[in-house]
Image (cartoon, rainbow, N blue to C red; front, side, top):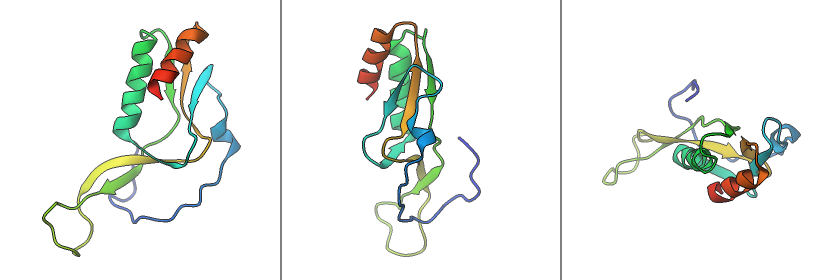
Amino acid sequence: MQGIKYNKIHKKKYIFVQKDSNSLVCSGGFGLKVQLAGVVTEKQLEAARRVLTRKTKRVGKVWVKVRITRPITKKAKGARMGKGCGPVKGYVAQIKKGQIILEIMHTSSIIMLAALKAAS
């Protein structure tokens, strides 16, 4: 996890602007591209990375191209309204439409495509 300046942050309305640098595969041969904007949790990203490494039998190299830096807070079930936001529940990454989130490099393109299909 990367360093965060503040422990908790306010929710904001984001206007997702596509950057060309995030929509190109640069390190690997194939990549997993996002179709819709949204958020990806750390558990979802780690599960996709594990699937890729297992399908390639740890021969291929996998790059994670997004940073998980946004904390998500959650109040207790029985807590009343007010008194600030609750403790940090987990972290998510803001994803833009068309962004590459995972890249993979392997000797066989058939294995890479099968691994990406399983990870998606």
